Length: 260
Image (cartoon, rainbow, N blue to C red; front, side, top):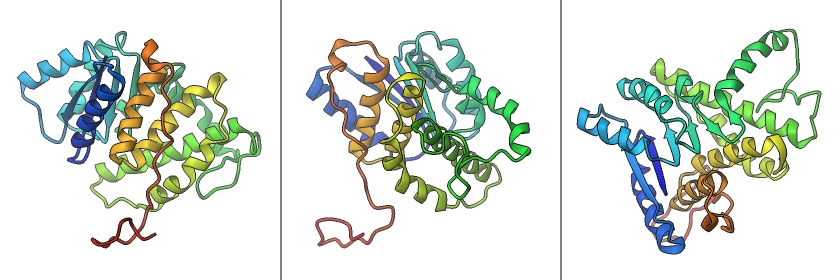
């Protein structure tokens, strides 16, 4: 069983490798996580390794990749090996990569095409719920309405992050803090079955990503494997809900926990 993760930053490699060790020790899945930091350009030898790992990956994660040569080379590689991948999970990346998200019936490429067709309607005054906006008129109390609203909020936040990165502006943490606060409660009321199942799965993975503790990274990997890799060993796994950490807190070296 294989997962390939592309990321930018220094905080993900250690929890990814810890997750690999713990998952194999507890569940004997023979899982291998190949992790690549896209913070610097890769050599041709490293790109051959990337393509080798993509060619056998069951699940692919792409996290925080906004632009650059690596992103440009990753796009055709994802397309070339797409039939092999059970799921491709793209989080907080440039739009061209976000469109490569595929999880079951959830296909961001198709979703973004549909969104463009709806923009005209929205300009005519269609009400929709955002983090600071009015609640949608239709399905305002239903799980499906909440799911669409939450997905829009997530997409809006990711878009803001990408635009700020391109313009080299500082990024506001206000929306991030609101997402951290609201996500767990809203996920509870989204249906687990039907066409919203894959949307909910993506939002759960995003929720794990919002607070990337070692436990949440482990659960993020396990959740994607359980939902999209057909293996009997995964079917009965119980995945913990996202571990909640205070978005803002005080730290003291002698205290057993953070002060909220």
